[in-house]
Image 1 (cartoon, rainbow, N blue to C red):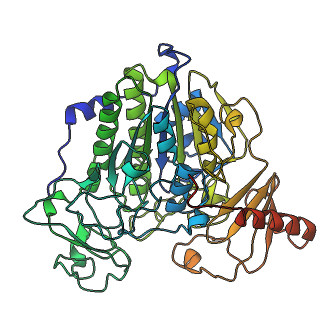
Image 2: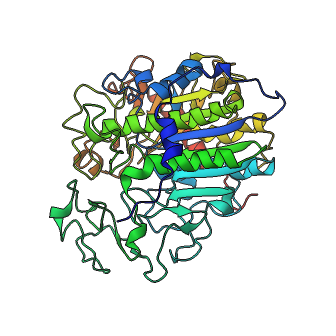
Image 3: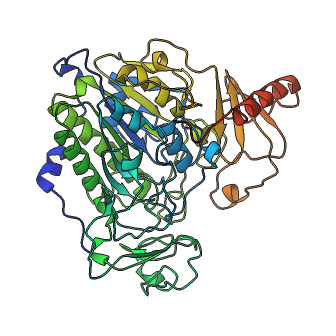
Length: 520
């Protein structure tokens, strides 16, 4: 396979970037709206960064953002899986309203064209917008010819520029898509995709799979992840044709960092919004050789170091262009951590005393705090002073909260679940939300320190049996006081039936909130 060409001179300039204080940047016009950059890690837990207590992995570039910005202790993704969280961040609506789940690789565009998004609202007030990295929000209309223009896509929901992994690293199609066209295809050898979770079927395109040729695998995989082999890793689904365009996982860090640098350099005088959803630290984990062996935790730990480098490289680009002072940076993750998520990469065996979810119970797929309490940092030298905040807020709130600083208006019917918590985000108030809805494979409701988890008849035993994570799914109600029990070990539902009833009623009110899909 032939990797996508890299501009190595540009990338190597980043290799020596050091975490330095951005406060030395020249002051920009205070009336100019800030540039906005959202770094969005994948499967990164609350305890996976050194600024959140990790000792077996060191993340100096992200730590520098935390040192000079605000580090939040009670910030949340809206869901414990990736597609709903991304949908909520961009639209200001909870994922359950669209029955959001983990999308297959051939899913149509999940955010319907015409739906207001953070990107489209910023476009309206003059921002240039880009998404670079892992997408996993669907593409096309469900009948995609990957050899033609793929639409609708990011352009139709507000992004001027896009360079994507279409779905996830463990799913086909395993090619880059730039501005809605697959990169590097051979017209004489078209790309074909057959998406299935049943990898035991023969590949219709004749390529080796993890089941037919396990000896070719660099990491053993479960049956679901044993489809077509790309770069020595079997994926979910089958693929054939244009093999020169198939990606090499180890190139992700350099390819995406270069694309982010190009976007920043090409923007000109306009303010910009860069949504940078990393592939790291999602499976399969194959960091660049530069980072291999940088921790004692194997590929998962090394991927965290790679993600930290990517963050530092983009921040250094902003600093060197004189843009960092008035750039509002948010660093967070889409959901909690998972160790073995389909591939054997020694994430479990080499974990040691590292705690990916920090002091919290659960992880990815879980309604417990480990599923959606995220390491979150806001950095904006022009306006924000360094500190630590315990304010409660949710990524769904970014839609309403960023309106004031950027100048767009949130109209009735838009972002029905988003609250303006800007004073808390900027460290100007210790208070964020008073209450918050949470979702995984059941629902929960926060009110102050109280957390109620609704009962469900759906078992979802695979969360614990396959993923080895406590999912929090139960046929009985659960009630926890997080102030004294952050690990959610003491169920107080029987002792406080009135509180259970109160919070269940509040949860049902969110579920029944009017939501008009066709609202402008």
